[in-house]
Image (cartoon, rainbow, N blue to C red; front, side, top):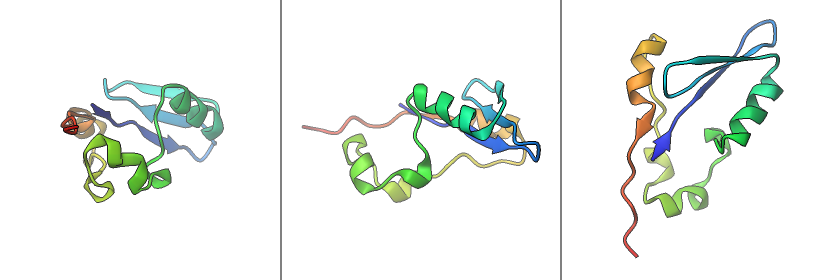
Length: 87
């Protein structure tokens, strides 16, 4: 299962994370928000390469983040079933 989360950093430096359940989790800083995401085993999309996703049975270019104008548009797109690679 591919699960997305979105991190936004406010001008004040506070980090907001939109999770797959539609909740917005607020952290005191971007670093704290990133650490919480790492603890939950999330990875930054811009930090992935082809080797990272090879075992997932998808190509890196197929990882397209959810898109929408509002959080409510994103939530239904935040979880995606991945096909298990044949071995």
